[in-house]
Length: 437
Image 1 (spheres, one colour):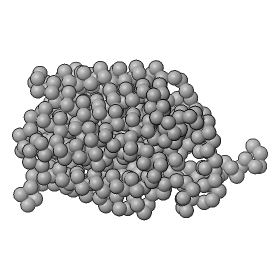
Image 2 (cartoon, rainbow, N blue to C red):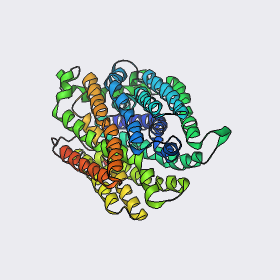
Image 3 (cartoon, one colour):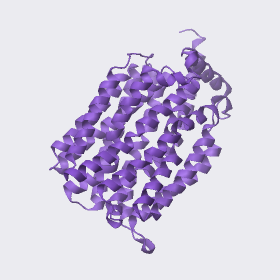
Image 4 (cartoon, one colour):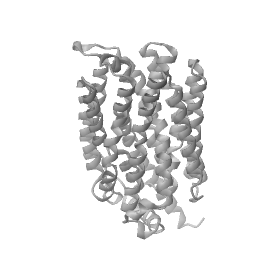
């Protein structure tokens, strides 16, 4: 190693550590709050469906209609993060979704439930794809899967925290209000508070970061410029980016796998309650176990994907685990322990495939083209969040069993894995052992 190479390496290491420490913990907290407000309806359903006399099809439709509103604003939201301001758009999202989440506590009828879930989807649209775009402004391609894994870890963590918290909230009865109503109020308020903090804490681009020393800003800008110049220039500002093979296949696969993922989140407490007959507090405690497994799987697969430079089989393997886990739930539905083990495998797949898949989605595109493509993948894919819970609720009502719906979602996950496995085998330079540590 030459003497001139030493300072560059030192600057790179310092910059990567400083950026990770500054951004990832805060973005992680934002996503914990966001994801909890999205899926806490699954815990509330243990009481809400009984109190409001909602059947499985009403609950399934209401839980899933969130994603119709979500779909409508995903692409515009992603582009605003790229071309306007990430911190302002993310702050707007958090303020509005927090307010709407609190309003869910006042629902009395099925139509009110549908409307508040639909508006919650509109309010949150653009958050996740905007974060994927935002992280691409701060992390190189070879560091991105681990950064995404640290961010996506908020999904299982929100449920690990949310499961016992929601179980406790379901047991309270303050001022004549049922526990499920207090659940929405107490879990919605933090989003409003953090929305205000975001305006002052986040920085849109590296060149605006006063907290980053000048030599580290210059290093990061140079690295990202090299990466951007290596991508097809004609797709950086073009809607043709949406028709690229990677984008189309990842969108289709994401739709199929999300069908099972959100059915898992929304219905797992109800399924475990039906199998075990346990109390609400014990059920919500048991549902935290699969999310612990998912957290470990997500961090591990994100690390190995960056360490080896391999993306598609990491993503496809996670999707395959989802199908295997859901099939196991059907097979062992008479045993609480074995069904819970099936949910653990499912969770490992749900949180394990995402870091590599989103790295695939950003590997060939940049600029507005990348932002629009990420928005498309997430918006169309998350329509599976409407289809999956609704299909499961509908088939449960028709067959008086969860088996048919869960098995259909397992098959969808297998097809998704096949689609991702057929993507071109593009690789990037793997990280060195020193970088990986």
